[in-house]
Image 1 (spheres, rainbow, N blue to C red):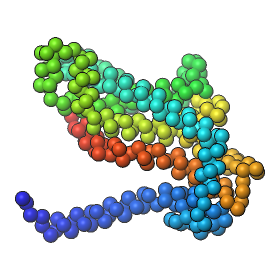
Image 2: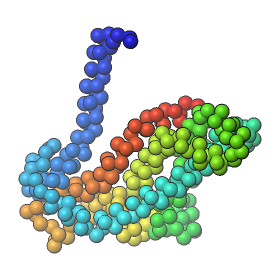
Image 3: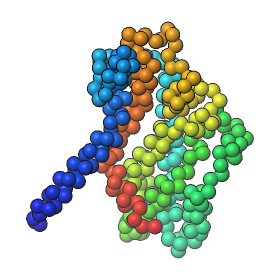
Length: 292
């Protein structure tokens, strides 16, 4: 066993301290939002809340969970994530598998690959995209949020390279036993690609959950806004009212604490979801980016 030198120990210690401080600084805004959401309206208005709640109360969360617009936005976001993830994964897998083959197997592989890659370099633009959605009759529907991003080229390239790194002998043995491409894909490639699929899952879920701009563009009715679009309208737009006079109880809830509660509730699903995929994340990201 190789002995760890003193300089190496010092380097690791300093490295851990620096990375820990950076991680803490990244978490500070979220901690502050959480503290404000659990604080009383007077403490939040007076600027007394830093990293710990003052006059602890859950009144803001009670109001947030009964707010009609918040619940509608949450439902649309969940619907978008489920539909968008299913479409993204199926399309990505079906594109990545044939493009992972050599040109001797798929002669026009490079042509097809560049057909997708060129979309990363050039975009049709906002106005043509809106006109396309309108011509297809998809405005103000959930499909306007999931279909334009059905093919995520970066995820496709990541999975394609991961497929190419898998041992060819496994595929050849399956062909000898009489398996076809569908059998090889679903029975061998997919089970062996858990790290890459977990990485793509994380990217896809976060992308759909955090997207807000397309909701403002393609949705005519605020009731069809995804959650992030709804939060953007109440936080960025100063004319939007988050609490009516009958909902606003200054002794417990203020506009600031109410917004903080909604923001934290919107971030909570991703905070819960990430740890389950974190062990696969780095492995899938690195292994899927080595071979081109």
